[in-house]
Length: 636
Image 1 (cartoon, rainbow, N blue to C red):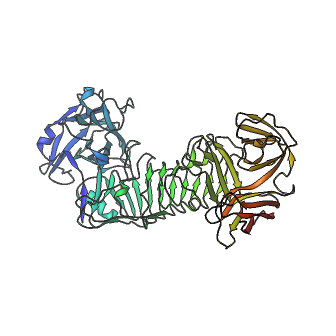
Image 2 (image 1 turned 120 degrees about the vertical axis):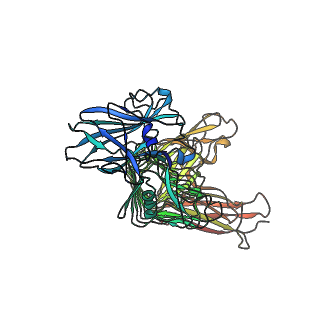
Image 3 (image 1 turned 180 degrees about the vertical axis):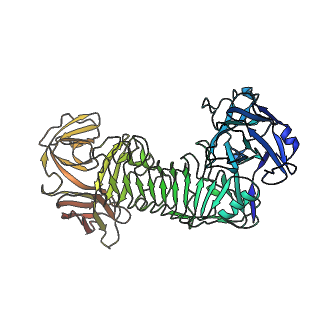
C-alpha cells in the first residue's frame, strides 16, 4: 500500500540559516532554539525558531522567499493550503494572543513593514484555554485581504514573503517558540490497498503535515482525500463504516472533498462508505472530483451536511447512492445513476439528465430561487418508473417541484408523488410543475399523486390527466389477425357522461383556425370535437381541439370555407379518432368523473383487403376504463 501527499516545504526552521532569513518589526530577532538552549522547545528534529512576543506590543516577523508555485496545477494545486507549526505557551488562563499569518505578493509592494500589498491570510485568535502546545495554523492561498476583503491582482507564482503578525495584550512578554516548519499541501491519500481514515491520519502525523486529525471514530481534514493513483499496482478501496469526517475548509474559497484518480494500469478503485457523517464548514466544496475514475460505487446510509456541488458517476451495474441524507448541500447531478430513498433537504436542485432512478427520494424545503425547480428532468424519457413515490415540499422561495426540459416527451406519467405547499393555481412561480417546451401539447398522466398539482408553461399546451383510465379498441381481421390501419371513431352516445352530446355550436374562422362557440362544453386541450351538419364540409368531422376556454375552443380547417359557418351545427365529444397500430390497437388514457356511454364505428375500406363497417358501443368506467374487441368481416 502506498500513502501519498504533495507536501512542499517552504521553511524548515531547523538550522541557523533558516533563522537568518527572518526580519523582525517591533519584536526581538528570532533565535535558534536547539540542543544548546536552556529549555528545549522544538517538537522534532534538532531545532526550531524561538520568538518572543513583547508585552502590549503589535509586531511581526517576516521572511522573503523565492518564487514558489503555491497554486500548482489541477484540482489539487488549486486547493493547496499553507501550514505553519507554532508553539503556544500557557502561562495563565488570561493569556490571549492574536496571531495573523500572511503571505504577500510582489505586486503589492509588500516590504514586511505593513500589510499594504495583496495578502492571503489566516487569522487565529489563540487563547491559552483553547490552544497551547504545538499548533498547526492553516492558511488558504486565495483567502481575501484581511482589511479590504478583495483579492487584488495576486500572482500565486511570485510570492514575496510570509509573515507572522502578533499582538500580546497580557502585560507580560510571552514566549512563542515560533515556526518549526512552514509547508504547502493539498491532499493526503492512498492507493493499491484498502485505504482507511486511520491510515490517512497516520500519514499526516508521521510526516508532520498538520492537516488530518483523528479522535476515535471522528476525523478532520484541511485537504482533499485522494484515492487511487496512475501508478497503482493493485486495487484501491475506501469503505469506512459509521465514521465522522469533517472537511474543515478554511473559508468558502477553499474547496476540499474526495478526489478520485484513474488507475491507468487497469486496477480497480472502489468507493463504498456506509453509515458515515460527512460535513463541511460551508456549501462551496465539490464533494466528489473525478467520479468517472471509480469502478465500484456504493454510498448507503450516510449524511452529507453543507457540501458543495455533487456529481454522481454514470450508471453501472451495482452503482448505488441510496438511503442517504443530503442536508444544505449544493446541486446534485444525478445523471442516470440509482438515487433511491434519499432525503435531500434545504439544498439546491436535484438534476436528472439520464435514465436515473430516484424512486422514494424526498426533496424537502428546497433552497432554489423563485421560479426555479427543486428537481430538473431533461432527458427524452418518460419518467414513469423513474420518479415514482417521490415527496416534494416547497421551501421559502416561490419555486416549482419539477421542471421538464425542452426535449422531454409529449406524454409522460408520474406515479405516487406527494406535493406539499405548492400553489394550486397555474402559471405561477410556485406552480407544481414547470413545462419548458414552447410548443406542442404536453400530456402528463398523474396516477396516485397527492397535493396541489398545477403547472406553468413556457408556451406548450399542457394537459394534466389525474388518475386516468384507458379506453382501448383492439381490431382483428376475419382470420383473427391483428388489423393495422383500421379507422376508429368513438364518441359520446348521450349527455350523461363527461363529454357533450349533439350540442348546438356556432363557428367562425380566421385563416386556418376555426373557433367554435360551445357553452359549458367541459372538454380539455387535446380532446376531440366531432362537428356535424355545417353547410361547409371543411368544418365537419372529428378535430383535435386547442386554446380551450369554458365556452369555446379552436381547431384547424383546410381550405377557406365561408365564415361564419352556416347550418344547424352540432358538436359531440370524441374519445378516440385515428388508425390502429401494428398490434391492432388504438387507445387513449384520461380521467372520467362519471361513467360515460360511448358509441362509434370501425372501418377499413380504402384499400384491399376491405372490410365491412363494424359498430361499437359501451360505457367507460371511471375506475376501469373500457376495452372493446372487434372482429371484422371481409367486404370483397
